Image (cartoon, rainbow, N blue to C red):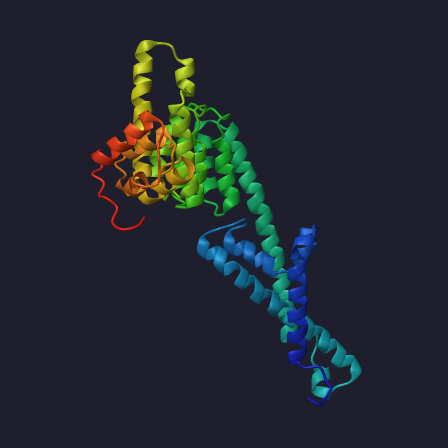
Length: 348
């Protein structure tokens, strides 16, 4: 190749500058379909993550795969342009004899375009199918709805999860098991953010059956800080005298006894969830409920005793804390004895 003629390194440099520029423009281009044509790596990212968010491994790998695809795409694109330039600017006869379609770079661009169209078709089908399944899950009969929930959960990514969470909205009341199935399938995703979203649904106005399903699911999930906070917020509302939905609407004594047993079972399961990571529970009680301060929360002290949180001894024994409320001071002293808290060695 004679001096001054564009080379493969030229195509690589141009490709790198183009991909960098499009990456910067990503958040400013509203016409996404046009952007996908210019940025085919985005389609690959969607395919890797399942559309809108996926597994942690997929989320980590997708940007790398997308970047590589974009670079290769534009290398092939600029190779094609440079071939056209060389053809019309004069080159050896062997180069002129090659047809445009016969160029490997051109074949690569055509392959990318076909893959791009296929990716767009898949994303459109996926979106349409999930919307259709969600409508069936909401409006369909028991058998159809339950089948739709299962199929909806088979899609990866946050968009499918959002559809399942919309099905769990407290305003949605169903007499069958579709919500129960949705909770179970969400729990199988084994995502701590999903656990937090489920815990957020623990509200006095949420149906008894849904609160039971969520409490069971949380037993097998990792409950992060947000999850723990939502559970404690629900328990705090009950401790302040708020009634659950069924308590406020049911007046028959025999039925209320049965309800109380189910509610007690929910509280028992939530206690187990909080006991799984005692250090985290104590941290939230310390930060949000005043444990270790002059005015600790009654609920926080009650939970420390109920859950036997010996991790809290360090906070209960803070030497500079002066609890002026006699009832709270007595409760703290009782907890220190019941938990057999060892004295703090050395400076605090």
